[in-house]
Image (cartoon, rainbow, N blue to C red; front, side):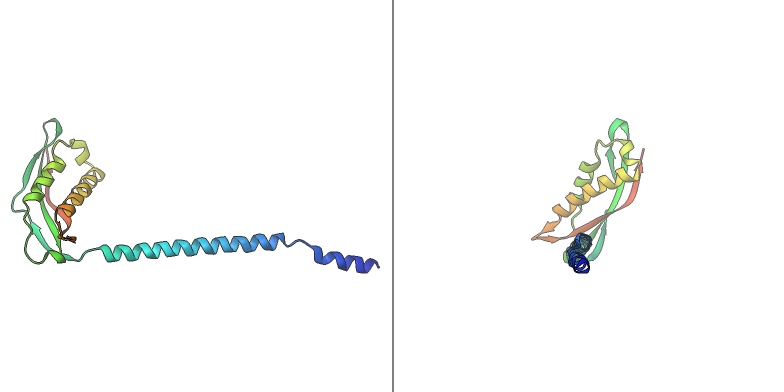
Length: 151
């Protein structure tokens, strides 16, 4: 009888550890799958949104912009157009004005670091892309500085 009692109690062992391991594996697989889905989805969206490079239109002359505290910036640039813009150069008059507005009154300290220059460039580029978008077609995709001298 004692043997029957011991064999009857053996199947009553708890499977808590097995349940915890299964739950942990499901959480890891679910998180990894979701992460992969969103990462791949993001890459696809970026690849579709990126325009193809077209011609580069260089500004014929540099501009001089007044900075804060009596300093100035001599700036030359070129615009990277998209393939959608065709081979004809865009009119740079608005780009000159946007560049002047973006840099006028800035402190020399902002322009003396790579981070400061990059931040202002990103702001200017966003305005350029918005300004040079016609019928939902982006005509400009980047700006290149050909001259950047501060004093």
